[in-house]
Length: 71
Image (tube, rainbow, N blue to C red; front, side, top):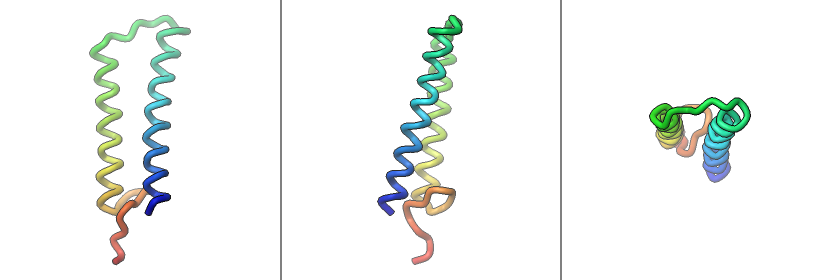
């Protein structure tokens, strides 16, 4: 159970880092200014994905299971 929780946390951190690095590369190297509303909308989608991961892990379904249904 603890290992699954750690994998979930690592997955969340990696997802946030990937999105942040994409924003950084687009702003710094490509030179495209991302509007603030679009950036907030993308972060909202990331938060919703994280919530789906956490809820499915707590329910015991999906690839990462914190709670086992076979009790």
